[in-house]
Image 1: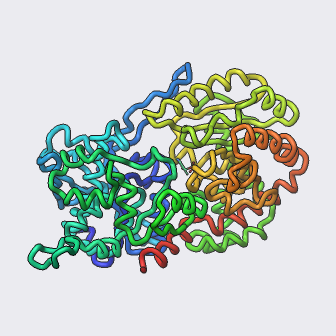
Image 2 (image 1 turned 45 degrees about the vertical axis):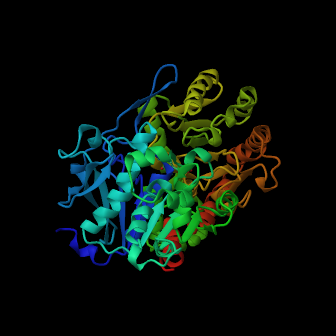
Image 3 (image 1 turned 30 degrees about the vertical axis):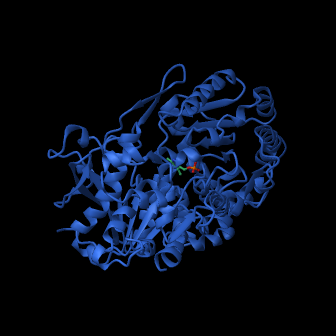
Length: 568
Ligand SMILES: *Cc1c(COP(=O)(O)O)cnc(C)c1O
C-alpha cells in the first residue's frame, strides 16, 4: 500500500466535516473548513503524526450565483476525487436503518514545502455496492434535512473510525473539530464495553474514563443553530440498538441528541477557539472545563506572493516558524507599501474581470467578506446610507463585498439582496461591488488586496474569526468590533481599530451603538489617516504584521494542541 510509511507513526486522528485542502477540492464551506485546511498544512510542516478524516463532498457546498435582483442561486459544485486523490483498497460498512452502507476512502497527501506529507482520508459512499440513495450521503456538504445530516455524521464518525482500523492505524487520540464527528465517541464507548460477566453489580457498563482520555473536542460556535441536535427517535431508527439509550441520554441530553453535549461528555480536553469564546462556552456548559486555544492561519498559504518574497528575503524561516514575523517591525515601510500595491493591483484586476467594475488604485478599498448570516451583521455598514455617502464624498473610498448565505438561511439571503439594492442606491456616490462565489481562492486575493478589513459581528457570537488574521499578515488594517480573536490582538490605533467598546459589560454593543462608532471612525480616523498621512498609514501596516502575524498563525495553534491537548 502506498500509504504504509505514515500508518506506523500516526497517533492522532483529526475529524472534520469539512477541510479546505485547495481551491479545486470543494469539500469545504467556510471558516471551519479553512481552519481545518490550515491545520493540515501546519501539521505537515511541523511533522506532527496526524491523519485527517473528512467527507469527500463530491458536490461541494454550493456554487453561488446572483441574479439581476440580487437573489442568491445555488448550484452543485462538483469535483472529481480521482483528479486529486487516490482510491484506497480498504472498505468498511456502517449499518444505517439496518442496511449496510459501504464507505471507501480517497487518500489525499498534503506535502509541506520541505517534503513531509500528511494523509487526509476523504470518505465516499458513492459506490456500486450501495443503494442509490446511500450513494448520495457524501455528495452535498451540509445538505438538506435532518435525516441526511445524521447519515453524514454516521459515515464521518463511525465510518471514519472503522476505516482507520481497517487501514491498520493505531490511533491514541481523536480530535473532534466541531460536534459533527461526535458519534465516533460512541464507537469508542462500545469498544470500551465491560462484559456482563466482568461487571460489578451497580457499576457502569462502559469505561467512560478511557474514552475521555482519548478524545479532544474543539467547539466553534456559541450560536445555538450551530449545534446539531437530532430527535432520539430518528437516531434509533438509523442506528437501532447501537448504544444503551439511557446511557446516551445521560451523555447527550435528555430531550434530544445534542452532538455538542455528547462531545463535551466524552472528551477529556475541550476548548473554545479564542479566550472570549471559551468563557462564553463555559457559561453554556457549566460543570465542564473549557480551555482556550485561539485560532491561527497558515502563514505560507495566506501571505500574498509579494509579501512572501519580502519575508523570504528578510525574515527567512517565517514559513516554518512564523514567530519570527515579530521582526517585521524592522521591514522598510515603503517596501511593505510596494508589496501592498502588487496585491491591490491583483484585486483590482480580479474585480474588473468578475464584475466589469474598475476600482481606482489611488483610493482606499474597504473589504467585507464573510458568511452572510445574522450575527455577522453584513448590513451594519449600510444602516445610514446618507451618512455613508457623505463620508465618501468628503474622503472617497471603495467597497468590495462577498459571502455566501446557507441555502436555508432566508435572512442571510435577504441581506445579499439588500446589499445589491444598496449598491444601486449608492451608484455615483460610493463605488461598491459584490463578488459572487466567495471561496478560498477569492479570499486570498481579497484579504491581501484591500486596505481595510471590516468586521462587524454581534458580540459574543463571533467565536474567533480568522480572515482578519490573514489580512493583518498582509499589512491590511483591521477595523473590527471587539469580539473573538480581535479582543486579543487589537491595539487600537496601532495595528488596527476597535469599533465600540469591549462588550464584556453588556452595554454599548447594540446595532445603533456599533453603527455610530463605525461611521465616526471612518470619518474622523481611518479615512483621514489614509488620505492625509501615508507615512503613518504604512507604519501601522508594519505594526499590524509585526504584532499580529507572529502569534495568530496555525503553527503556534498546533504546537499548543500538540503539547496541551494531545500529550495529556
Ligand atoms: C478565512 C475564510 C473564512 C473565515 O472568515 P471569518 O473571518 O471567520 O469570517 C471563511 N471563508 C473563506 C473562504 C475563508 O478563506
